[in-house]
Length: 322
Ligand code: AVJ
Image (cartoon, rainbow, N blue to C red; front, side, top):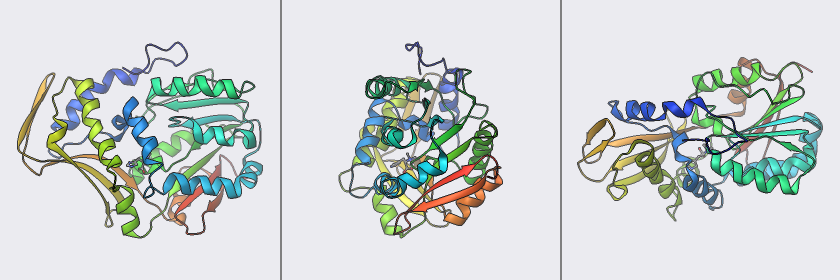
């Protein structure tokens, strides 16, 4: 369960649907597991390790954009905002921007609630003047909303790391409309989006030599075993991560090494050797299509910063033209 142990994070009703949701997605003809389940406490740590890999350029490239253009980005978004960090994880990205952005309230949101609470407790020691209110919530589900304690003025949604890529473009549109509706008239969105690039670079980033991404992907089965009382044998599965050029996205799958039957509370399924469970999509955009996506969701006055190779884009978009 997500966050019953914490007094600081509100209870997330979506957590109650988790077993039914997983049971359904594992029974579909093409079995799949939502990428949000990659982030149990170990998965969150493995993702941190991924960000250190030489092949995984997005985190580093995004950070270089903030290093180079941080002052200008800060001038564009303004100080004293209510900073709502979607998928905050270890909160490191937002924390590195605190000196520039000087938010009044910081609201990190993450599905991995326990991991988040620990990170925020440490961060609050370093920045005592910022009010920090962590929220354990699955904002990938339709109908999510922010708790009442989130300040309504000068909301700056922060959605870095190209997590938007986990949504299909249609889902991304819906999601961004929902964010836009929660911006108020003086709010905005600061988003990091990974850009289409050489296929070999993309393939390597999602199938690294050390096998950290493989461990990250396989660990979702450990998480599902706990959430669903399932008996996936990790050793019987292999990581697949590659760029699907036709669909403009990275795909991650887990491929059965041998024919096997997996059981869980209330269900079971046979997998043939070579059969795959789809675990993640990571869409890559062009600058133009990213800006269009934001504008179609109701955002205006977009400003774009990229690195020299144009591998990654940081975009600020306002709720209303300015
Ligand atoms: C956190 C969703 C942006 O798609 O690059 C990293 C997750 N998956 N390696 C991404 C991920 C495999 C990551 N996002």
